Length: 115
Length: 114
Image 1 (tube, one colour):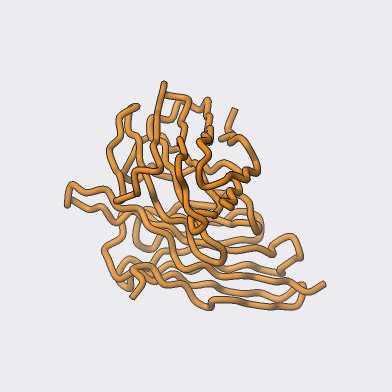
Image 2 (tube, rainbow over the protein chains, first blue to last red):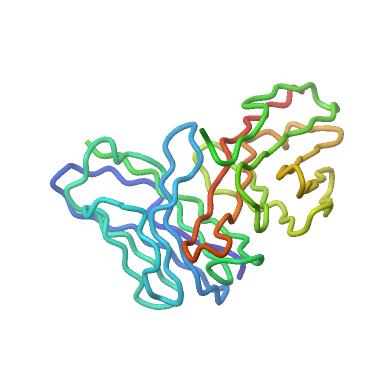
């Protein structure tokens, strides 16, 4: 299985809602990532989990809360989002968190719209 | 300014034509990766270059890394409509700083006319 899956594919939420994005991989990768991508822009790194521990938080607002329950799963909990948070949220995984074997495998993304 | 610049920003070519996309880094590269993205979808890993002078090919796509120039090029031979999409280079520029940093280039939008 060489795939990263993400659910849901699309999500529409109000500013007072609480929702979660889910990401799963079964490649035995020990690094997992959340990226945010706005239209016509490259992905921007949000969080990195290395061996199930949060190793990087790129100054992301606390209304985004990541969670890594086990080595295969990565969640992103959303609460009190703003309309400017609307974007494509991409999950990725790699064998290790850094170094020369850091090719990242991406999921198809979750298209989030905040009303 | 961007740490990883791509050129051109967009490209429209006739089917069958060759094309080249460049990715230039302002930082020392510790691995350079090429990805392709269809609009609104995830990124598909194309290839990884580790060493200066390295060249890799997959089907009609060839990528090279010029370590001295801190630059990589992606060349598509005899382009087809299926090559259309957004091409992104990615790089690990963490080095020995102890701080992880993985960045993406500005992207090149390719359209291939049938």
